[in-house]
Length: 490
Image 1 (cartoon, rainbow, N blue to C red):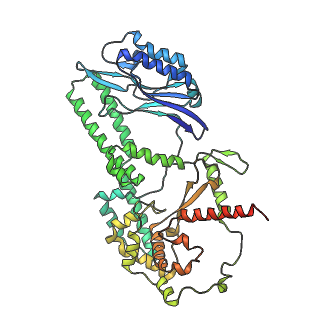
Image 2 (image 1 turned 30 degrees about the vertical axis):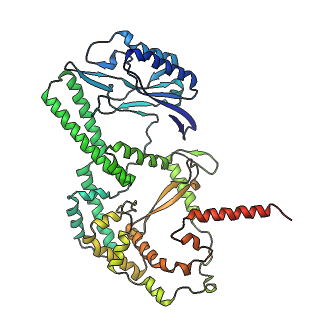
Image 3 (image 1 turned 120 degrees about the vertical axis):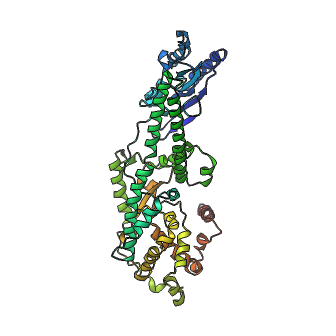
């Protein structure tokens, strides 16, 4: 597999192999790998089941192998000037019970040539946990882990609604009476609900990753005990309980990563959570900003320096330095909306209209700063509908939004595959659900009037049946024709 490293700007080769177990086929296999060594001229790493050992320490249990058993692997490593990437944790990757005795060996490994080690000196291998196979997975890490901020914003997960313990928490917080405006009351109830849900999620659900790590440690502990006591009923029963616990934790992972991926067929199409995690993490890694160029072209790799650069550039870019009166051309435009239509646009909405606007918002959309997406409001609509409706009505009556409701997160989406400056990112606003609902109401009311509000030369962009790409292609064609005409003067 040819891999392009976007950070180091170079190609590397990772070869996945499955070596034969039969002695008569081994020599030809290693001869083919040696031929590849002479052909591959970029950093090279070999990963997979090599069915070979390097020394006696890579085997536990069973009869002792002769020294000749280790010749093939060690000879190959010497020839290619390579080494086995070091292991962190459990040293064995294969187990089997032979003649009522557990045998452990390190048959799977990663071999790296010197050019790979020079490029990735921090490479490390970690062996996973044995489950249904006699081999365990091996995970290679080429980079030192990136330290990310620990305190992430709260996000209500829609699958939490499946737990009955959540209902009394929301109900109790919604029975508290607050003083203030309708918007302030709703904001306070959401704030208290968020605090109690975070406590519940931490205590009841816990950190699933830590639970999986603890489960893996216990399985490793049991494995080491079973080597010496393979017939122990207590140890075998304990192992079965740990494997069942692992299945439950993986099922939880499936729900979590399937939610992040937001594709229904993924959740129902594959039980293994590793696939969902890879899909979700791929998007995260693409959006991760590891370095950035400043105005002088110097690379910034300090997280705080990168953050300050974005704040500085965006503050300059989105603050207007002009004092032009935006309403100075008001008298030059003809009135397109009648008084009756204007009253319809600003009238107080009823409960049905508010509910229709809320329920039209996709439940899987990322929430705003309050952490509650539309899925939460839909699930507990009968309980919270009066407070939610009163909040929307208050906006139409007073024309103002509470600051907490108007707060917005800005997510930076890269415009290309290799962003290096602040203008290579597109800021996307993550608004609170109340804000989204008000916007939906206004959009639904404006849609029937767009034919009169939009100029005929712009209407192509607002037609529901046409795509933006059509107008882009038409505009590109017009520009091309214009260039052709200008290029032939006289």
